[in-house]
Image 1 (tube, rainbow, N blue to C red):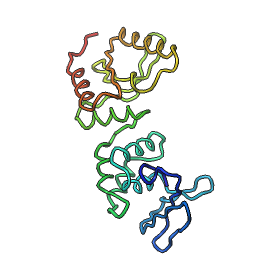
Image 2: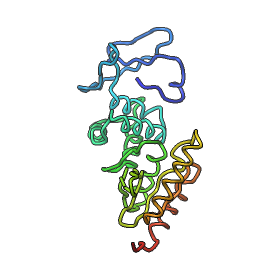
Image 3: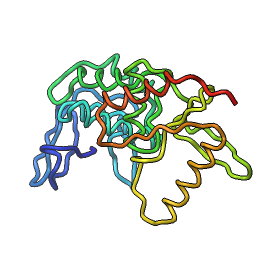
Length: 222
């Protein structure tokens, strides 16, 4: 099983068994369950482990909504989980000790159909804010070309020549990174694009209001 906070932030080994079996070993925590569906157990490195889908269900008890959401987003980015599969599973799952359907539903409520977890936690956060505030959905990983240069924009509203990406999605380790970002933004501005800069420290309300303000600007005439 995948580890999380609280009791999961230890060196303990967590195993799962059916109700008729109890594993009693030093350093091992046994979780017994009467619900095991096809595909809940998969084989990795010659070991039986819970699937990503089952892991999310099992972590719905000990993890808060935001924490479980990060696990879901990580699985989505690694193409290990599909939201529709999780929706189907939650629809037929009942709460039990160590499992919270309410938490699972809240995680899904923040990830509407078509949701994209992006390439980083901040991208995922921005995507959720856009959906939760009912803002127009942008094109994700939008590709543009200026002269001989090609760029990929994390979020873009092409009809408004507006894009959001860059600052806050990572750290610059080299001065060449800063130089490249500056040249890129200059090219995009010269091509008629307007950038929105967002950082992780901004609150959800500030991010939503900033995006909304830019979307309210008149569409530039090219």
